[in-house]
Amino acid sequence: TQAAEQGLAQSQHALGHCYAGGKGVVRDDEKAVELFRKAADQGFAAAQYNCGFCYTTGRGIAQDHAAAALLYRQAAEQGDASAQYALGYCHAQGKGVEQDRATAARLYMQAAEQGNASAQHSLGLWCMMGFGVAHNLADAARYLR
Image (cartoon, rainbow, N blue to C red; front, side, top):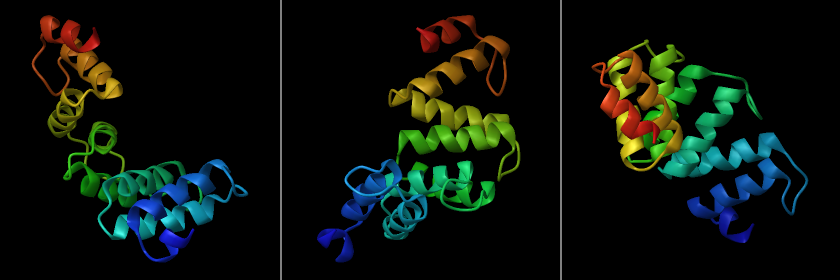
């Protein structure tokens, strides 16, 4: 708590996880979001992703897909693979942003190249069906492998 109270983003983020999971403290989703937000506001990518996830699910804060997409975008721009996948999903579904399969595919590809299994799976399926990318069974097999 001391480091988080001093404003260290990494500690705020870690403490947020403690509150989100009830690890060493009583579970408190609102406190988790508060800590994730403090770290996110300092540009800490993992906290931006986790805060966005809370907005997506409505856990500890009112569900707001546009706010989630904004936070995912901030983290994705820093190269966070989970955020790239999540923002891709937002674009694929039109949640909080305009539906855009080409943008979704580009984000899935960025995340997949970093080893994000969910992105690899989604991209593989999209290659099989030709959603947002050219229909390519060889690429589909490569991503799904």
